[in-house]
Amino acid sequence: MTETPLHDLDSRTRDIFRVVVENFIESGSPVGSRTISKNSDVNLSPASIRNVMQDLEEVGLLAAPHTSAGRMPTELGLRLFVDGMMQVAEPSAEEQLIISRQMVGDGPIQDALAAATTALSGLSACAGVVMVPQREPILRQCSFVRLSDYQILAVIVDQDGSVENRILHVDAPLPASALEQAANFITANFAGRSLSEAKSAMLDEIMKERRAIDAVSADLVAKGIAIWSEDSSERPVLIVRGQANLLDNEAVADLERVRKLLGELEEMQEIAGLLQTAREAKSTRIFIGAENKLFSLSGSSVIAAPYRDGEGRVVGVVGVIGPTRLNYARVVPMVDFTARSLTSLLK
Image 1 (tube, one colour):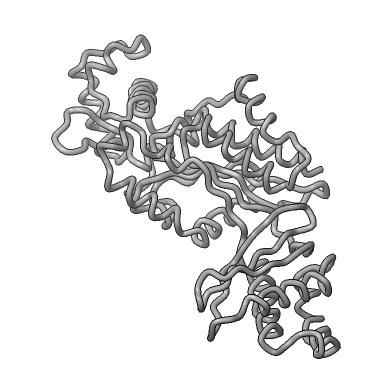
Image 2 (image 1 turned 135 degrees about the vertical axis):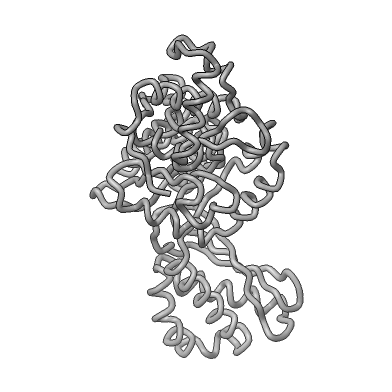
């Protein structure tokens, strides 16, 4: 269906369309003609309103779900509303304070990002997501923990205090002495270096210290450094908070949609790809429903904005994921404010 420009709608039709969208966003339910007739901006009878709503349905801006007499905006209708009719304002002073307070502290930057995302999620009643600036960890300390005979947990501590872990698969059970020896070797020889530096120097260091480290420990060192360096260069780090917000009262009536959305939130690499498209945006980007393939099944929307470092380079993206009926006029400024606050934090 071809898109209907806003200027093709007369003022009466625009008023009715706006009231339908605003009521739907507030209630999550289809909006009937009687509800619209009670609005002071629409001075028409329910019968006349129904005729206009029928016209809006025919051009693809409204839809009538099931046998309900009410109408709800389509994704095309929501896009028209967001781009041409929505009026936004800065978040309230209280909302700005809540977000800003979460970024105060002397801990790792990742902690501030996670806290800001949690605050944004709570205020928007959506799932909050942030793409952490891509940077190579500078090793401070390493350790290995046995999970099973064939699985080892590799734990790395960055110089900024952040801790991450990965699971290594080994071909045979390793003694505790091998785990300790490998961890001590990495910490002693590579502390203060980036992972790529550690990877390039690894074989030389092992050859120099071949009498101090056995073959089993050396193999674990190689696997540990390899998986860390590959992971840091190929996988963006994502933080997702507030998935439980997606289970609101209206969502209970549409559990299949929520189930699909929660499943989609597990696809971290796909989410990263979606957020990457917002990195080059000059301002906040809005993806509604099927406009992005990842969330097309669940009919969800994404609002995302890039944030920058002290040199003005885009280093990450922050945003929210929620139902298409989310309050765009309120949430878009929140996401934009959070992105600007993170930019200030990184200067």
